[in-house]
Length: 443
Image (cartoon, rainbow, N blue to C red; front, side):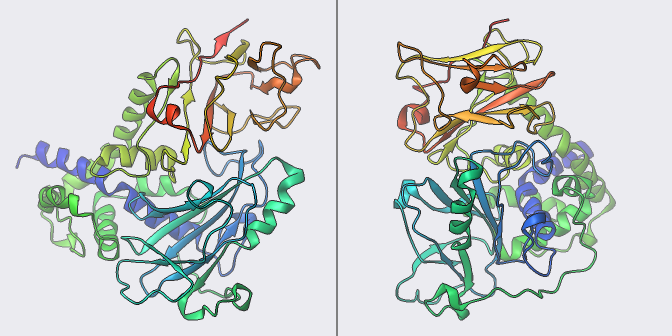
């Protein structure tokens, strides 16, 4: 195999392993604390951390934040034993608790779409467990030992936070060996040992992209032992074996040409992702890019890596769709120097069984500061409809005045983009029979 062929294969392998390596680094970063620390959004393995409020314009930890829901997040290690997940009664509130395996596939999801107002308790088990499910528990299985839970609870704003916080407190993880049937009988440990040398400040994506090819493959091979590749990955792994990539394999014995190829693949991988993202955004429909088929990637390793990079933790389409717009109806980049309207004809607002919103992002994919502290607007925002039943959302920097403020989504002065979030989308949105109207420049 030529050097060029090896380098091309190494880039493919880098993309293949990207979600597993990202999971390892993100888990290590987010769990390097002895006890739950909600302020830092960290907790030890197998414990939840609770985001008690929605982000504001000062929040910079995660790109493309969400103002619609509060989160409870936990990294799981199921290599030793399963965990019991307990949940409260959510009443008429929208909620969902997806479980992502180490390859970023949604391997299980419970929520309003699938279970109504309440569900559980559940037993979450990994690939090495073969015991009997205790009476009263419903089994959820994962093909990997490492998993990430990102529970979401709809919220209507600060006045609603205390009610959601109580639901978060009732969302718990308990080792099976500690399960008595009473969630209140277990107290998570608060003195968990923390591994030395963990970088808790550099964003995980930057840590992954800084790995040499050898370090990347070393971590990938180690992770594949407890987080095995899927059956459909066999042809890819057969090709990647030429670069020393296999569960548990030691890449130290690689020849210089193989090491050089792995380093070249590690350099080319991030640039490939950037190129793919730009290409996807430019191939939009009517100003909107809609990524479909998320959370269940099969052997589409390129899409899997792309979503891991730019939307890690993405839900199944059945639970949420996220149309994204960077241009107006005539293909011009969105800018706060202009004013826009998103016009929905009567009866043609986003078709959902949950709820929908339009979220503003600045050029850094973060919330834009504004006088109303309003970062999203949607069907729960009390917007006014026109006499004919149509709805106009005004997207602009300047306040449109008291008669129109209820329908105003504030924009920054410079470049911006917007997400239209559809929770529990109906069939027309899932099939593409319904598409969002374009943003029309009005001034």
